[in-house]
Image: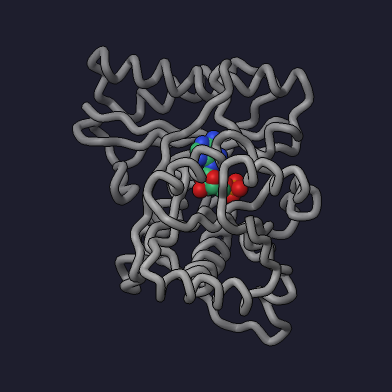
Amino acid sequence: MRIFKEIQSIQNWCKEHKLQGRKIGLVPTMGYLHEGHLELVREAKRHCDIVVVSIFVNPTQFGAGEDFEVYPRDFERDTSLLERENADAVFAPTAEEMYLSDFSSWVEVTGEITTKLCGASRPGHFRGVTTVCAKLFNICLPDLAFFGQKDAQQVMVLEKMLTDLNFPLQIIRVPIVREADGLAMSSRNVCLDAEAREQALVLNRALGQAERAIKDGERDAARIKVLLREIIESSPRAEIDYAEIYDAYDLADIQQIDRKILMALAVKFGKTRLIDNRLVEV
Ligand code: AMP
Protein backbone atom coordinates (compact mmCIF):
# COMPACT_ATOMS: atom_id res chain seq x y z
CA MET A 1 0.00 0.00 0.00
CA ARG A 2 1.40 3.37 -1.02
CA ILE A 3 1.21 6.34 1.33
CA PHE A 4 1.12 9.76 -0.29
CA LYS A 5 1.32 13.06 1.52
CA GLU A 6 1.86 15.32 -1.46
CA ILE A 7 -0.82 16.33 -3.95
CA GLN A 8 1.39 16.24 -7.03
CA SER A 9 2.72 12.76 -6.36
CA ILE A 10 -0.66 11.08 -5.86
CA GLN A 11 -2.15 12.97 -8.80
CA ASN A 12 0.65 11.67 -11.05
CA TRP A 13 0.19 8.15 -9.68
CA CYS A 14 -3.57 8.26 -10.32
CA LYS A 15 -3.06 9.69 -13.83
CA GLU A 16 -0.73 6.80 -14.61
CA HIS A 17 -3.32 4.23 -13.46
CA LYS A 18 -5.98 5.97 -15.52
CA LEU A 19 -3.77 5.85 -18.61
CA GLN A 20 -3.44 2.10 -18.01
CA GLY A 21 -7.25 1.91 -18.13
CA ARG A 22 -7.74 1.12 -14.44
CA LYS A 23 -10.90 2.07 -12.62
CA ILE A 24 -10.14 4.22 -9.57
CA GLY A 25 -12.29 4.25 -6.43
CA LEU A 26 -11.93 6.99 -3.81
CA VAL A 27 -13.01 6.71 -0.19
CA PRO A 28 -12.78 10.13 1.48
CA THR A 29 -12.46 10.00 5.28
CA MET A 30 -11.31 12.06 8.21
CA GLY A 31 -9.51 9.05 9.69
CA TYR A 32 -9.82 7.34 13.06
CA LEU A 33 -11.25 4.50 11.04
CA HIS A 34 -13.92 2.05 12.15
CA GLU A 35 -15.94 -0.74 10.51
CA GLY A 36 -18.17 1.84 8.77
CA HIS A 37 -15.20 3.27 6.90
CA LEU A 38 -13.82 -0.22 6.21
CA GLU A 39 -17.13 -1.24 4.66
CA LEU A 40 -16.74 1.66 2.21
CA VAL A 41 -13.25 0.37 1.37
CA ARG A 42 -14.56 -3.17 0.83
CA GLU A 43 -17.31 -1.87 -1.43
CA ALA A 44 -14.73 0.15 -3.36
CA LYS A 45 -12.54 -2.97 -3.74
CA ARG A 46 -15.55 -4.81 -5.20
CA HIS A 47 -16.13 -2.12 -7.84
CA CYS A 48 -12.67 -0.79 -8.70
CA ASP A 49 -9.15 -1.83 -9.73
CA ILE A 50 -7.44 0.77 -7.56
CA VAL A 51 -8.75 2.03 -4.22
CA VAL A 52 -7.48 5.27 -2.73
CA VAL A 53 -8.48 6.22 0.82
CA SER A 54 -7.99 9.83 1.82
CA ILE A 55 -7.42 10.73 5.45
CA PHE A 56 -7.82 14.42 6.07
CA VAL A 57 -9.46 16.21 8.96
CA ASN A 58 -10.70 19.04 6.81
CA PRO A 59 -10.55 22.32 8.75
CA THR A 60 -12.93 24.18 6.44
CA GLN A 61 -15.91 21.99 7.33
CA PHE A 62 -15.61 22.74 11.05
CA GLY A 63 -17.13 25.89 12.49
CA ALA A 64 -15.69 28.06 15.25
CA GLY A 65 -16.10 26.30 18.59
CA GLU A 66 -16.58 22.86 17.00
CA ASP A 67 -14.32 19.88 17.66
CA PHE A 68 -11.64 20.29 14.96
CA GLU A 69 -8.80 20.47 17.51
CA VAL A 70 -9.94 17.45 19.52
CA TYR A 71 -11.20 15.32 16.61
CA PRO A 72 -9.65 11.85 17.22
CA ARG A 73 -6.64 10.99 15.08
CA ASP A 74 -4.46 7.84 14.84
CA PHE A 75 -2.65 7.61 11.53
CA GLU A 76 -0.61 4.49 12.38
CA ARG A 77 -3.68 2.50 13.34
CA ASP A 78 -5.59 3.74 10.28
CA THR A 79 -2.86 2.68 7.86
CA SER A 80 -2.55 -0.77 9.40
CA LEU A 81 -6.33 -1.28 9.13
CA LEU A 82 -6.23 -0.18 5.49
CA GLU A 83 -3.29 -2.44 4.77
CA ARG A 84 -5.40 -5.38 5.95
CA GLU A 85 -8.22 -4.35 3.59
CA ASN A 86 -5.79 -4.25 0.67
CA ALA A 87 -6.35 -0.58 -0.04
CA ASP A 88 -3.92 0.47 -2.76
CA ALA A 89 -3.08 3.96 -1.56
CA VAL A 90 -3.63 6.36 1.30
CA PHE A 91 -3.64 10.07 0.63
CA ALA A 92 -3.00 12.14 3.74
CA PRO A 93 -2.22 15.71 2.76
CA THR A 94 -1.40 18.56 5.11
CA ALA A 95 -3.91 21.36 5.59
CA GLU A 96 -1.19 23.79 4.50
CA GLU A 97 -0.89 22.16 1.10
CA MET A 98 -4.64 21.68 0.63
CA TYR A 99 -5.30 25.30 1.53
CA LEU A 100 -2.41 27.47 0.42
CA SER A 101 -2.16 30.78 2.23
CA ASP A 102 -3.84 32.60 -0.69
CA PHE A 103 -6.60 29.96 -1.17
CA SER A 104 -9.77 31.69 -2.35
CA SER A 105 -11.92 29.29 -4.43
CA TRP A 106 -15.00 27.62 -2.99
CA VAL A 107 -17.59 25.18 -4.26
CA GLU A 108 -21.01 25.74 -2.76
CA VAL A 109 -24.33 23.99 -3.34
CA THR A 110 -27.14 26.39 -2.49
CA GLY A 111 -30.80 25.96 -1.58
CA GLU A 112 -32.81 23.86 0.87
CA ILE A 113 -30.51 20.90 0.56
CA THR A 114 -27.75 22.82 2.35
CA THR A 115 -29.76 25.16 4.57
CA LYS A 116 -31.71 22.50 6.49
CA LEU A 117 -30.54 19.96 9.10
CA CYS A 118 -26.74 20.14 9.52
CA GLY A 119 -26.67 23.14 7.18
CA ALA A 120 -28.74 25.08 9.71
CA SER A 121 -26.78 23.95 12.79
CA ARG A 122 -23.35 24.14 11.16
CA PRO A 123 -23.24 27.18 8.84
CA GLY A 124 -20.49 26.81 6.22
CA HIS A 125 -20.09 23.09 6.92
CA PHE A 126 -21.28 21.89 3.51
CA ARG A 127 -19.27 24.54 1.68
CA GLY A 128 -16.21 23.02 3.36
CA VAL A 129 -17.32 19.50 2.43
CA THR A 130 -18.06 20.27 -1.23
CA THR A 131 -14.85 22.27 -1.62
CA VAL A 132 -12.62 19.56 -0.17
CA CYS A 133 -14.38 16.81 -2.12
CA ALA A 134 -14.07 18.78 -5.37
CA LYS A 135 -10.35 19.04 -4.65
CA LEU A 136 -10.04 15.34 -3.79
CA PHE A 137 -11.89 14.41 -7.00
CA ASN A 138 -9.54 16.58 -9.07
CA ILE A 139 -6.48 15.15 -7.32
CA CYS A 140 -7.40 11.44 -7.30
CA LEU A 141 -9.43 11.30 -10.54
CA PRO A 142 -11.84 8.61 -9.30
CA ASP A 143 -14.42 6.88 -11.49
CA LEU A 144 -16.40 6.10 -8.35
CA ALA A 145 -16.44 7.74 -4.93
CA PHE A 146 -17.85 5.93 -1.89
CA PHE A 147 -19.82 7.69 0.84
CA GLY A 148 -21.80 6.42 3.80
CA GLN A 149 -25.55 6.83 4.20
CA LYS A 150 -24.67 7.69 7.80
CA ASP A 151 -24.10 11.24 6.50
CA ALA A 152 -27.29 11.25 4.44
CA GLN A 153 -27.38 14.98 3.78
CA GLN A 154 -23.70 15.07 2.84
CA VAL A 155 -24.17 12.46 0.15
CA MET A 156 -27.23 14.29 -1.23
CA VAL A 157 -25.27 17.55 -1.40
CA LEU A 158 -22.33 15.87 -3.11
CA GLU A 159 -24.58 14.17 -5.68
CA LYS A 160 -26.08 17.59 -6.46
CA MET A 161 -22.59 19.02 -6.93
CA LEU A 162 -21.64 16.20 -9.33
CA THR A 163 -24.78 16.76 -11.40
CA ASP A 164 -24.66 20.55 -11.42
CA LEU A 165 -20.95 20.77 -12.24
CA ASN A 166 -20.71 17.70 -14.51
CA PHE A 167 -18.04 15.92 -12.51
CA PRO A 168 -17.08 12.77 -14.45
CA LEU A 169 -17.66 10.32 -11.62
CA GLN A 170 -20.43 8.58 -9.76
CA ILE A 171 -21.15 8.24 -6.08
CA ILE A 172 -21.89 4.87 -4.50
CA ARG A 173 -23.84 5.06 -1.25
CA VAL A 174 -23.04 2.51 1.45
CA PRO A 175 -25.62 1.67 4.15
CA ILE A 176 -25.04 2.66 7.79
CA VAL A 177 -22.84 0.23 9.74
CA ARG A 178 -23.89 -0.12 13.38
CA GLU A 179 -22.43 -1.51 16.58
CA ALA A 180 -24.05 -4.75 17.78
CA ASP A 181 -26.35 -2.71 20.06
CA GLY A 182 -27.51 -0.44 17.25
CA LEU A 183 -25.40 2.69 17.73
CA ALA A 184 -24.27 4.00 14.34
CA MET A 185 -20.49 3.73 14.13
CA SER A 186 -18.75 7.08 14.29
CA SER A 187 -15.23 8.29 15.01
CA ARG A 188 -16.83 10.53 17.63
CA ASN A 189 -18.24 7.59 19.65
CA VAL A 190 -14.94 7.36 21.56
CA CYS A 191 -15.66 10.83 22.95
CA LEU A 192 -18.71 9.49 24.86
CA ASP A 193 -18.36 8.53 28.51
CA ALA A 194 -19.95 5.20 29.57
CA GLU A 195 -23.26 6.78 30.58
CA ALA A 196 -23.59 8.85 27.39
CA ARG A 197 -22.61 5.80 25.31
CA GLU A 198 -25.53 3.92 26.88
CA GLN A 199 -27.96 6.81 26.42
CA ALA A 200 -26.89 7.32 22.81
CA LEU A 201 -28.72 4.10 21.94
CA VAL A 202 -31.84 6.23 22.04
CA LEU A 203 -31.13 7.51 18.50
CA ASN A 204 -31.50 4.15 16.80
CA ARG A 205 -34.35 3.22 19.14
CA ALA A 206 -36.27 6.39 18.25
CA LEU A 207 -35.75 5.80 14.52
CA GLY A 208 -36.89 2.19 14.88
CA GLN A 209 -40.06 3.07 16.79
CA ALA A 210 -40.91 5.89 14.39
CA GLU A 211 -40.46 3.55 11.43
CA ARG A 212 -42.74 1.02 13.10
CA ALA A 213 -45.41 3.68 13.66
CA ILE A 214 -45.23 4.60 9.97
CA LYS A 215 -45.42 0.97 8.90
CA ASP A 216 -48.44 0.62 11.21
CA GLY A 217 -50.19 3.36 9.26
CA GLU A 218 -49.28 6.71 10.83
CA ARG A 219 -48.92 9.23 7.99
CA ASP A 220 -48.79 12.54 9.84
CA ALA A 221 -45.17 13.78 9.78
CA ALA A 222 -45.74 16.16 12.70
CA ARG A 223 -46.94 13.30 14.91
CA ILE A 224 -43.92 11.19 14.00
CA LYS A 225 -41.62 14.11 14.86
CA VAL A 226 -43.29 14.41 18.28
CA LEU A 227 -42.77 10.68 18.79
CA LEU A 228 -39.07 10.97 17.87
CA ARG A 229 -38.61 13.86 20.31
CA GLU A 230 -40.46 12.11 23.14
CA ILE A 231 -38.32 9.02 22.85
CA ILE A 232 -35.05 10.96 22.64
CA GLU A 233 -36.00 13.24 25.53
CA SER A 234 -36.50 10.17 27.71
CA SER A 235 -32.68 10.10 27.88
CA PRO A 236 -31.73 12.76 30.43
CA ARG A 237 -28.36 13.61 28.85
CA ALA A 238 -29.70 13.94 25.29
CA GLU A 239 -29.97 17.45 23.92
CA ILE A 240 -31.77 17.54 20.57
CA ASP A 241 -30.24 19.63 17.81
CA TYR A 242 -32.83 18.40 15.28
CA ALA A 243 -35.28 15.54 14.79
CA GLU A 244 -36.80 16.05 11.36
CA ILE A 245 -38.59 14.34 8.50
CA TYR A 246 -38.12 15.45 4.91
CA ASP A 247 -38.54 14.18 1.38
CA ALA A 248 -35.69 11.71 0.85
CA TYR A 249 -34.71 13.12 -2.56
CA ASP A 250 -34.55 16.87 -2.03
CA LEU A 251 -35.26 17.54 1.66
CA ALA A 252 -38.52 19.27 0.74
CA ASP A 253 -40.94 19.78 3.66
CA ILE A 254 -43.67 17.19 3.96
CA GLN A 255 -46.82 17.03 6.02
CA GLN A 256 -48.09 13.65 4.87
CA ILE A 257 -45.83 10.64 4.67
CA ASP A 258 -46.83 9.54 1.18
CA ARG A 259 -43.40 9.03 -0.40
CA LYS A 260 -39.85 8.02 0.51
CA ILE A 261 -38.77 10.04 3.54
CA LEU A 262 -35.59 10.72 5.46
CA MET A 263 -35.87 10.79 9.24
CA ALA A 264 -32.77 12.62 10.45
CA LEU A 265 -31.48 13.16 13.97
CA ALA A 266 -28.67 15.20 15.49
CA VAL A 267 -28.37 14.92 19.24
CA LYS A 268 -25.72 16.18 21.63
CA PHE A 269 -24.48 14.26 24.63
CA GLY A 270 -22.36 16.80 26.46
CA LYS A 271 -19.91 18.14 23.89
CA THR A 272 -20.32 15.19 21.53
CA ARG A 273 -22.83 15.63 18.72
CA LEU A 274 -24.07 12.45 17.06
CA ILE A 275 -26.13 12.06 13.91
CA ASP A 276 -28.23 9.18 12.69
CA ASN A 277 -30.97 8.69 10.13
CA ARG A 278 -33.28 6.25 8.45
CA LEU A 279 -34.91 6.14 5.04
CA VAL A 280 -38.50 4.92 5.09
CA GLU A 281 -40.61 4.01 2.10
CA VAL A 282 -44.39 3.62 2.33
P1 AMP B 1 -15.86 10.63 8.28
O1 AMP B 1 -14.48 10.07 8.51
O2 AMP B 1 -16.71 10.63 9.51
O3 AMP B 1 -15.86 11.92 7.51
O4 AMP B 1 -16.57 9.59 7.33
C1 AMP B 1 -16.01 9.20 6.10
C2 AMP B 1 -17.01 8.42 5.32
O5 AMP B 1 -17.39 7.26 6.06
C3 AMP B 1 -18.30 9.20 5.04
O6 AMP B 1 -18.74 8.92 3.73
C4 AMP B 1 -19.25 8.65 6.07
O7 AMP B 1 -20.59 8.73 5.69
C5 AMP B 1 -18.80 7.21 6.14
N1 AMP B 1 -19.21 6.63 7.41
C6 AMP B 1 -18.95 7.09 8.65
N2 AMP B 1 -19.56 6.32 9.58
C7 AMP B 1 -20.24 5.35 8.90
C8 AMP B 1 -21.08 4.27 9.29
N3 AMP B 1 -21.35 4.02 10.55
N4 AMP B 1 -21.59 3.50 8.31
C9 AMP B 1 -21.34 3.76 7.01
N5 AMP B 1 -20.56 4.76 6.59
C10 AMP B 1 -20.01 5.56 7.50
